[in-house]
Image (cartoon, rainbow, N blue to C red):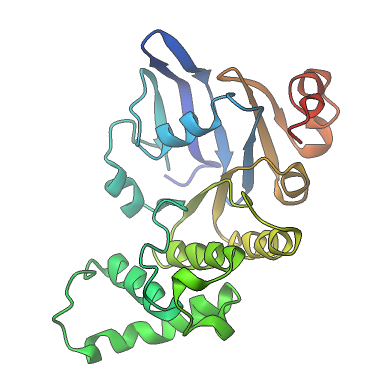
Length: 251
């Protein structure tokens, strides 16, 4: 069911032993857009992300992906349907090269990740696709580098490559700019913009400069509820948002 919205939540609620972390969230993510989830610390962003990617089960409400109810579908099944959370299935082999990491991710997409007894020739067909992905994320000069020794921003680019290997229809990026210097932020922002072509991206991000440049739509959470939603120009002028978020020094 290819409707306007690829992902919707209805009255999404999560309670932890009497504390309501997320209350009645109705999120609508438009297909082929970049949608940012922002808010001050403790606003419930990570909890919403964990609910969407099935690391938590909601106390109430529903999650719809491509028009289908996925509220109680398992995390691995969600990924197979095309909704993949990056920086959680990251480059998990620090001792392997960039190329080897991407090839392992491509094997995982084929369901052959642990068939290490297969002849090398059976993996050759993955080689071209691996090279394409490495080039797409700007790691051509690092293809033989050991993943664990990459600079921080390049590791993030590798994580995006391993996510793209799963051919996601929708990517969920969990604070992609966390811990990055200015040069890396610029590079990863450009990369996210490029890989978002024909895909949907939902991201939690603290860097308001990045959010303003990349996002089509911004949802602002406060104390587990949606405070405001819209494009950056509208959000940044909203008095409630300025009071709750912009004025708190988290921007």
